[in-house]
Length: 409
Ligand SMILES: C[S@@+](CC[C@H](N)C(=O)[O-])C[C@H]1O[C@@H](n2cnc3c(N)ncnc32)[C@H](O)[C@@H]1O
Image (tube, rainbow, N blue to C red; front, top):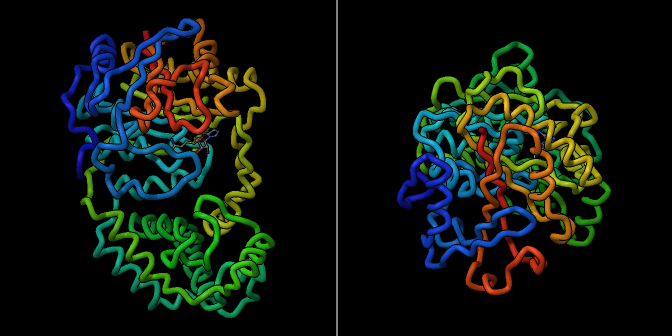
């Protein structure tokens, strides 16, 4: 498994890391540095476009996920092998998986139960041979359901034969789960199946639909079918799962360090993580945008046996409410991050960059034992945008990641 960054390693001190990013010219451009509203900004192309691709193991789609190069950059610069890296909003698990790839102990939580189901299997992947053997076993076990009324809604997405097989697979996992017999091979197959339920190519179980992280309603799907003049084709589930497994595992398998731990829990309340046990947090919280969890995830929740109405996804309509939420999270991070450790907190662009969430983060940490070292801004096409970039004249459509870097005092 490759390490994302092949650049010279800075030491783990913030002073040196800030010096490293201030002098960074890894991709041929120099860092623009300026102060605005008591925050120091460091703007450059620090990762992504001309860098080696992240490992294939990350290639699971998830709404609002970041690229593996982002956690890779901070893990490389601020930790050493064996250190502990945490993400309290882990989503598809980009940070914990990148931490494991880079031989760090991976810790993470997310309020969405799908997050653990999508991340855990890739932290300790089953071997390809075991996955293929299990697929054969499931098929031979005749886990296909006795005829039961086929669901009209699901038939908007699936051929009835495909649907019978999906239901059989779902029943296999439900029975293994209730019998306490889910092992890492089942866990892997369920993760791939969750990812392949719906999508826009023959690599998915469904007829053409939206990308897998946004399940449309059956009504909307029937509309898509009419517009495209399409009917759901028969799909070979096992061939699709085997092919995606080969692709995810193409770079090899990393070992997981003891003590790695992923759970379904709120970011603000993680009593299972010991005091001062974390060296670095790399995370991206939910932003102000309202995400309708139940609508987006109804199909994956159905497959995994999760009640979407019971998942308390954070939704904050105002900057003040969001700031209070972020403060609660930082209060918990003050407990789990060791003195001298770091938090790299990505704030996306919301409301066409009219709301600058890094300022809300600065306000949120006031009075807590954190010092803001700066805001690291990664421009994905620096050459096109460097001359016009500025906080106050930030252009709509410019693709940036902005990361508030805070040090635990
Ligand atoms: C922007 S996404 C993170 C994506 C992640 N960086 C990745 O690469 O996949 C934000 C995540 O926060 C989770 N979330 C929302 N409220 C939460 C809470 N109170 N505690 C923990 N996770 C929460 C959502 O389920 C979502 O997965």
